Each structure stands twice: as structure tokens, then as C-alpha cells.
Image (cartoon, one colour):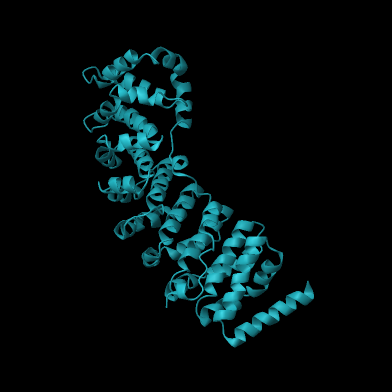
Length: 406
């Protein structure tokens, strides 16, 4: 039976849940590679501000720069021009429109094609990445410039630096919404990602991959297809094995996004990922604990069988010490998780009782913040609705014992 018919508690306020998770707007999730640019400027010893003054607002200078960037017969001058464009676009008040109006986008697309040098490709892809990090109209111009299929091919390129930057650029395009996401995925991005996660990569590259998968998984309407969800599972399993906190956190939230859609919970369960997510509840990093519990909480909003798959992974053994953890968000997530277990079968309710969790649940009902108390109240309510007479009587005894001993 679908537990949605048994007083399932999806968290009551999904907007509130998203605020707890730290989700931000589309624009903020796009990444402009500006910090790295600043570091490289020191090495190159270039006075970028002086060059901006020389180039703008004189559009003729921008045209000359475009001509130099398009001149493949002089590769050194071409590389220097593309590098200068990249430096300009990396600035806070970048002259993006002026450069685009002078024909820079098709030139950059030409520069990323496979017959060019990796160094030229890197500078051009880097520039496209930063343009795509801007407002939607700029992202759209990059997406429709012919760059996307080339960028997807570059993800499989032998030069890891170029591949890393290419997937960064694609991540910014994907993050512009479901239409851009499906447009990029239509060029076959998933297989190159699967190939990459099996390779030995710098951790910064792996973080980019996890971030891009997170963008693919975002819960837009329409959600990403079930086929894509299935295809990307092997990459998620590999990424969860990393010890890097950022990689693991982004990967858990990608899985969390998939499991917010009820039709995809079974795909996650069948992938064999659940035991690994459960093990991450024991992480030393609180944010990873919170993310793991929230992700598993989505799964237990599903059917009784899906809930049992989580319980069979020994999740409840972590909770006796975590139910009263000083981190309020973690406690909220755990109470929400347990409220959904109590909407399950009598045997599942008994597992919670046998794990010794009723006393800390009752203490949260008494001493937690408002949200914790609300979620703990749902635990009690669902137990009363779905538990056996013996289980309800046991809960009443625990309540009385706590009341007379506080």
C-alpha cells in the first residue's frame, strides 16, 4: 500500500524544507570562474583594468580584438586575444554585450573545436563558461551558439583541463532551466560523465561533476526523465565513495532531488545506493548527516517496501545518539523521518520502539524548537493512528514516565 494514503508527512512545508537544505536561486547556482582568474592574473602580471580602459567603450577596439581572436593563421596572437577576452569577461562589470555584439561568440565556438590547441580551447571554453554564468539571456546565447555539442565532445577529450572546463560550462547552461537541461542531455552528456567518474581525476574536477549532476537532478517541471535517472545511477554510486565532503554533499543532494519525485524512489532503491547513504548518517560532518537523513526521509515517504529497504540498512541504530544532537536541523530531519516510519506497518513501528527511540522522541516533543516539536507530534499522531493497541499503550507509558520524571 502506498504510504501516502496513510497520513504520510512530506515535511508539511516543502519550501521550508528547501530553505533548510540551503537551495538557492538559479542565478546563484551558476558558477563563474572568477576566483581562479584572480589567482592567475597575479602570475600573468597583467593590468586588466588598464586594458579595459583601452578597449571600452570604444567598440572599434572590440572589433579589432574579435578580428585577432579569429585569426588562426597567427596562433600566438589568436591565443593572446582570446585570453584577453577571457580576462575582460571575468571582471565584475564585464563588457559581455559589447564583445558579443562584435561577433565574439561564433569566434569562441570556432576556437573550441577539436582541431585547435588545448590551450586555445581552454581559454575559449573558460570564456563561454563565464558568459553562461550570467543572466538567462546570455546563457541562452551560449546554448544556441552551436557550442553545446562541441562542449559535450570535449568532456570526453583527452585533455582533462579542457574537459573540466567544458563540463563547468555545460553545468551553467543546464542550470538555466529544464529546457536547457534537456537540450544539453540530448547531445549525450551522461555517457561521458560515466566515463569520467571511473578515471583518476583531480578533486576539483570531481567536484564539478558532482555539481553538474546536482543541476541535472533539480526538481523542475518537467522533471528529468526516468531514463536519465536510471543512466546516472552508476556515477552517483562512485561519487558517494569519495572522502571529499563537497563531492559527497552534492551527490547526496542530487539523490535527494531525484527522490522528491515518487516515481524515481524505486530507481534509487534498486540501484543499491541506500546502504551507502545510510552509512553517511554516521559521518563526522553534520551537514552530510543532515543531507543523508533528509534524502532517506524522502525514500520513506514511498511504499512500505521502499521504507523497509531503508530500515533493513540499519538506519535506526544511528538515531539514539542523534535524536538529541545539538544541531537543530538534524533533529528536525530525524523527527520528520520517524514520523513517516510511524505511518508504515505495525512491524515497522515496532522497529522504532525496539530501537529505544520513544524516550528521545518524547523529549523532543517537550524540549525542541517549534518545528522539532511539530515533527515529534506527527510521530506520536501516526503511532496512534497506525500502531497496535500494545504499541499505543507502550507509548502512553513512556509519556507518563517522562512527565513524572522531568
